[in-house]
Image (tube, rainbow, N blue to C red):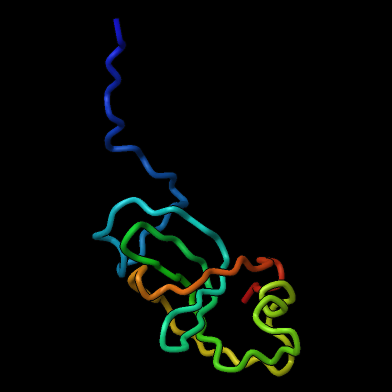
Length: 113
């Protein structure tokens, strides 16, 4: 005889959990941490990323206007902003997943504000 499992509902969030006003109406997300998000039309953002099947939310986002690297975006992700890197604060960015080209994991210690 199979045991019936109850679906998990109304899980309490930890007191530290924060919901941004920009994504309060959306469902469960997978937290991906600090990422460089490469979007279509040439937009590149760095920030704390969470995603579901439809949306990519980038909190504390900064637009990468100039990479300032000699070895591309991988160098930027690993080493953090370099002297020639130009970043613009953009707050919270919500992008449809169909516009996400790639996500590159960053070294979070190098990307502290």
